Structures are given as structure tokens and as C-alpha cells.
Length: 303
Image (tube, rainbow, N blue to C red):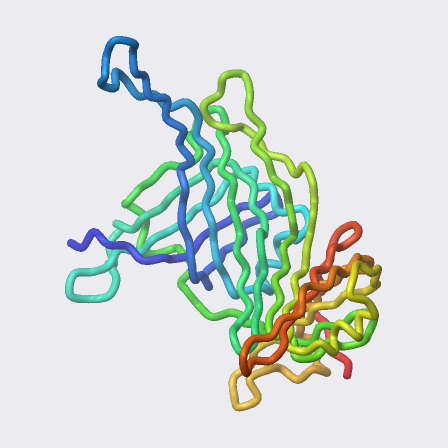
């Protein structure tokens, strides 16, 4: 029997129900172990190793932004009072996947889930990276691992939604020749530890410092911003066009199926302007929102 496993689905269990991510492109666990190694005076060999602390996290990468942004707040994340399940499907000898109850399940009893970045660039579907902070519930370690998961019952992989780079507008005026956008919710999440615990029992958001990095290939956008140095702007909107099958590749702009990420008030910090050889001049602007950013999931895109 093969002992290799492929990424499968993950269940993030929030207070109001379970969000199943079955359109994954990356998944993994980090145990975050800090080991105390004791070297006694007069001895050159390690005498003992003990687990001092462990800060365990998992990550997910998904292009199913509609499901993600529907269930997970881009500004506050998601409390997971009954944890999460991360699955791997066992490969079958001389076949595809096993039909027996021998699949991988990494389980957490308590945790916190949040979006760490959302990236899109010309011609490539937008993708989000998320983190799950696993916690100690007083009984269960942050993660436990089993290879006896059921072959049935888990949601099968599927393509649900895909979104692509759309227009970027500042106070209603579109920037031109935008090549990529990186949205960082900027959640400064920190472990809360004490009382001699090996595993943290809680986390909290200490600061929110969202940023929106917009990269483009025309100096015209710097003229549109009206400054080469820091300037205040309103309604910075990044649109993500919903993908569609067929030769159009996108749902038409007038349909309310697109995503908008907005900073209603922000400082805009233009980047350097540089060119090389026969390449175009390129520059960027870093948007520093005042307050939080917001997401809207049923937007039409006006001309």
C-alpha cells in the first residue's frame, strides 16, 4: 500500500458552522517547536532535550475567493471554537486514490483562522493565502494526526469560483496598465501565553495595518495620483472579475458577480519610477488605508 498522500479538503469550523475548502492549491502544517537542549558544564554531548514551547499553525492557499470572503472576515478573521480538519488522500498502488479508511487527517480542537494575503496579476487567477492558528484547549495538543480517515464523507475537490485582475479605481478614476495587485489585511496576530503552558491557549489581533500594493507600467498613473509624494485619497477600489468559461473568459462587467476590495480613506505612497533597456518604465503605489478595508462580493463594474 502506498504511503504517499495528496492535498485534499479542509474544514474550518467557526462558531456559526463549517466552511469546507475543497478548491485548494496549497496546504501545510508547521509545528513551531522550540526545543530546550541541555549541555551540562564539563560535558560536550547533549544531555537531554525538552519541548520548551510549540506555536503550531497551518496554511491554506485557495482561489475560491467567494467562499473565503463570505465566511471569513478580511478584517477580523474567524474564531474556531471547535477547531479544524486538514486532510490528505492516500494514493493507491497502481491506481489513483485508496477507497479504504486510510487517509490522513490532521485535527485541531481550537483555533483562529485569518486571511494573510490576496494576490492577483495579469492573466493569472487571484489567490488567497490563509493561516490557521491552532490552540491548546486544556486537553488536546494543537494538532493530532491520523491515517485512518474515512474514504467517504469528506467533500471532494471541485472548482467553485475563480477571479482575475480587474480595474483599479481611485475616487472613480481608473489607473491604466495595472499589472498586479497585492492586498494584505495586515492583521498583527500574536500568541497569548502564560502560566507555564507549553502550548498557547489563545491569540489576539493587536494591530491592523492593511496595505494594497498596485504595480503598473505607465508614468501616467503617477500623474493621475497628482503627486510624487504621499497624498491622501478616497475610495481606492480593487475589482476582481469573476471568471467564466468560453472565449470571453470573464462574466460581463455589468453583472453583479464581481468582487470589490475598498479602502474608503487612505494615504497613497507613489513608488520609484524605473526603466531598463527596451523595457517600459514601471512604477507602483502603496495604499495605506486609514482604518480598515472592506470587501463586497456582488458588485457590477461600471465603465
